[in-house]
Image 1 (cartoon, rainbow, N blue to C red):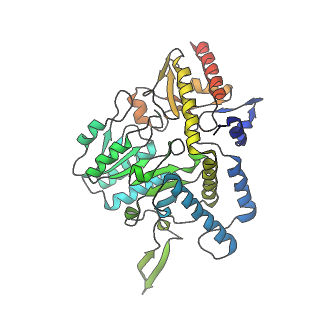
Image 2: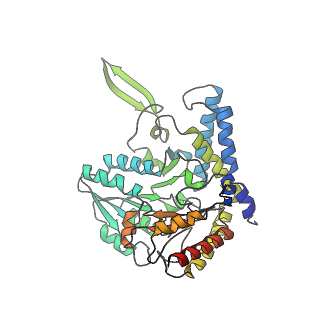
Image 3: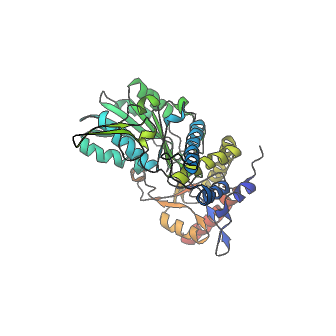
Length: 410
């Protein structure tokens, strides 16, 4: 297929926006992605023509939207190749997903003096919930480090594992380094030691074809807003045999099949089956439906076509950046869609602020990953991240303006 970048850009209305008569160049896609017309149009259509509650009534609109949500569940299942749509749970975002899994798993699986393994590259959302619970439940957290190239040190993993290791929770790709981690090796080692695995796929979900059955993890987490869908949708894939035995964390309406009250006492509450029993309360209906439309859009373009395009863009970007003076690029050269860098003796915020004057939007700071930032002995980095709509022209303008900034500040 001929990848028509001009046509794809036209599908994203915000990319036509001008500030001070200049178009924007958006290079912060690891934070969130923009939304195509199919998503925006259908969001408006939903509010105008179909809005209602779901899962609790038999009237036409409620049934229609309930079916739309389940249709999105099926689309996600196919997108990541899970065995069944019933292995897909909706949350509000990846942060809530981690809080849900940490709290649920720690109720029964993690005991006092047990331990879990995280890595130094993790996003705060995969650190803080575990840390807080470790203080309450009295379990330990062990940290897997990286080597000089920024790759997780698998040789050290076996040294961290002992008979009390219950969970390994690792990012599929670092949101700072853009390096794909050796999760197949990690999961193989985990399975040999009867350890539950959680993979954070938030940064990779629409930049690489994901097959959870092939990966063979127990849980896989990602967010809709990083794959061209509205905010407010998180997804947990979990193996059905584990989900069926997973205790609840968040409870409320919509998940109860029966409540018995005997002599003014509640003596028995019965819940519906998974995955629905984990989705209490009114869901983010419009965003879940929007996620279904975003997946439809990605499928129309073709995930493999998107991957091929982004490979060319990131290769082009790295070649251009490597020719700049005073630059430090973090991690090895083999990256997916994320590049973090600094310019010697220039603060990352200064770079970001000056690029903003040219309507070039990048991420600066600690990237919600302070441990890895500290590991590199810096206070923050400049991060650029590409998407399906990033063009060579975007990168060329970014490089040209970055050169001007370096010349200005040096």
